Image (cartoon, rainbow, N blue to C red; front, side):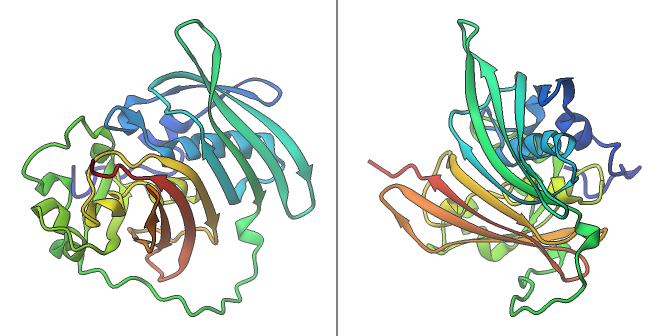
Length: 284
């Protein structure tokens, strides 16, 4: 994974933009070919899928910026053709609400619903500047003191194509799992960006909340941690530069865990928050 792109990609002209672009087939219906470049252990990443549906809704609704989007992941998506169907639930003056589902096809040619979302959109640039918060940016060491996938002793079992498209530099304090000594704390922190240098926008924030290694690794668990439900709140348009992402888990019970994520921009603003419920694979 490159430290920085030799020619920086721009918003609207990057691999992420091309791979999340949908083609309108008709009113409320969009086609896309899900890229294999955003997979982890063979399955398409949930944050990438959320960005795909987010862009379809931005086209279908009168407002262009996701404020809140909640997704239920019904079946695992695979690279290849898919169709997104959208519905406008309400179109208001400052907020519009819509729903969308992504479908793929089984071996018999029948549509299978993969993910369903409900979202509200508005105009981030129209929000007031007033901020009153007790939240503070995560304490992450400088980038040069953090470690990325390229520093790992070997490839991820089962493949992780998505890491080639991301700039990840993880806090060493959350990397015990990679050394065979997980801390037992459900924490993951990292610098985040796209490998081609494209700055963040509201749609890449939908990816950022679900792009780090799962906190379950630092709790001593291994293997895929599939998302059941994910809700993201986009709070403001991010400033140029790398993001900082902090994810915590407080409760793993009954084979499920929650992950609470915060995304901070280069101007020390909390630009996105999320919570997801995920299924953990417990040891027999």
